[in-house]
Length: 355
Image (tube, rainbow, N blue to C red; front, side, top):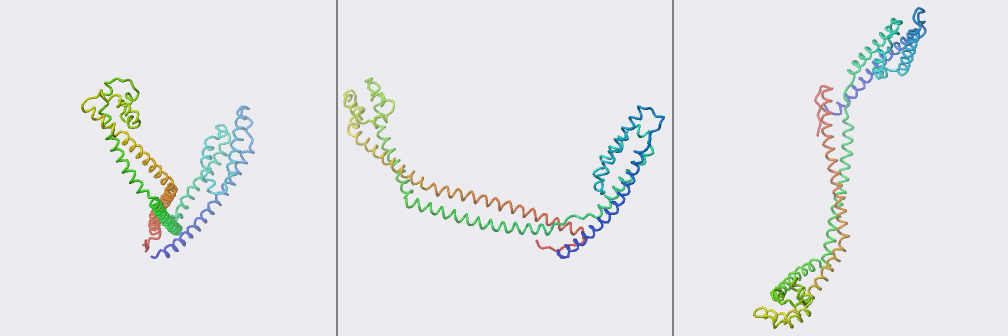
């Protein structure tokens, strides 16, 4: 059977069951009205009856109070009852009233109370019959058309989001290309290479010079001259690199106290320290300028970077939305198949469908 034909048969069956339910509801609601009227009449009769004269006055008061409570409560409940559905909602309250009407009331007006209770019991039984017959007219809700519409809407939304995703991806690639061109034009790679080379050369120069100065730290310490330059150089050899004139002056004064290899080292430093220290100073100045230039380029490029990050966040959001929608499509497919199985079971026929 084709799906379209199956849905038409389902609609016919659903309409038939709807009419059946309407008949059942009408039939039992009529019974309910009759029962309600009968109870109200019995309540009026109970309310109007005189308490026997031979009853103790204290008991009369108790019975009077019990009757007023019973009558008013039952009337209040019944006022809410118009349909069998209303009656079903009140059943728990009616059950409580049934066992709490007062022992003296039951003793003096047993026939009246039991008469009302019989009608309530009959109404309860009729309500159960009503539910049983109604249940036979219920059919599962088949939402194939609703599912199909939702699937179509989701498919359109995925298509739109996919286009937006492609547009964002294109924008990201363009901004990355713009950033690459900007860095190329600013020669960022060349500057970074110069920084790397200069750092290596500077490290080599400093290492060689400090190595020479370090060889004199022990003899200088043994001299115990008390001079600031001597103390600072012993603590850190780089002090002599940063203060070459001061150290050279110290060496000139103390050279005669050095011997052998220490004197040779001192002579080398007297000849080379000033020039090498100046070279290091200039290299550090050049390195500082290159680093500042690099930082300026990177700072200017941060606008590109922020744009790229913003676009990438937007891209992830679109991807998450698409992923959630695809998961929803899978869930709808499962609901669709389940609805088809329910429809086949209901109609007792195999349905031809294309997934």
